[in-house]
Amino acid sequence: MNASDAEPPAGPGDGLSAVAPQLRALRRRAGLTLEAAARAAGLSPAHLSRLETGQRQPSLPMLLALARIYGTTVSELLGETVADRDAIMRAGDMEPTRAGGWTYFQAGAPGRGMQALRVRVPYGSQGDIVRVHPGEEWLYVLRGRLRLRLGDAVHLLAPGDSAHFDSLTPHRLAAEDHDGVELLFVHTLLQSPTATLCLGPLTGELP
Image (cartoon, rainbow, N blue to C red; front, side):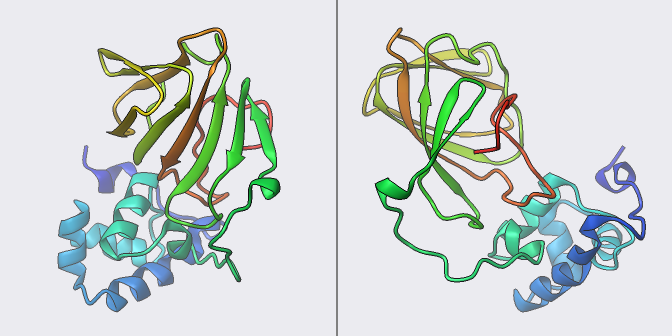
């Protein structure tokens, strides 16, 4: 079954219906024909045409692929605008969010194509959760030791070590030591409230 067969037709009440004209406008802004954009995204021209006319709704991987091809962000594809985004994030303005035992601090502005976080992972928290989702992840160990499982391989990362991997690779993150681990974390999870992906089961707000 190909991707065009897997997507249900979009109904008139779909929240993503506003994406259609934006997809066409951004493709034209990028100077791409329907055929060239569809080929780069791994879609048929007919399927991309249906996305642009609102007859189909895009999946999360499609949105991410099209954003990269058009040189934009998923937020712009979804028609979202963020006014006067600050380039600087002050430590005192980083409010913690706690979810699933982890503590997150926003280290980047919202509405960007990437999300940057400072993450504290306590020992014994979420270490058995396998994560698989579209996008890429980069992490850097600030303090403590991280046990990172990528597919069937297990890696032990110490302060100063980093990892950069495709998020479709099944992965697990856990603190190796009882004092926990602190990370810098950058990922390309989609930033729209209509297309939310998360780092694991959350008991609070999304980071």
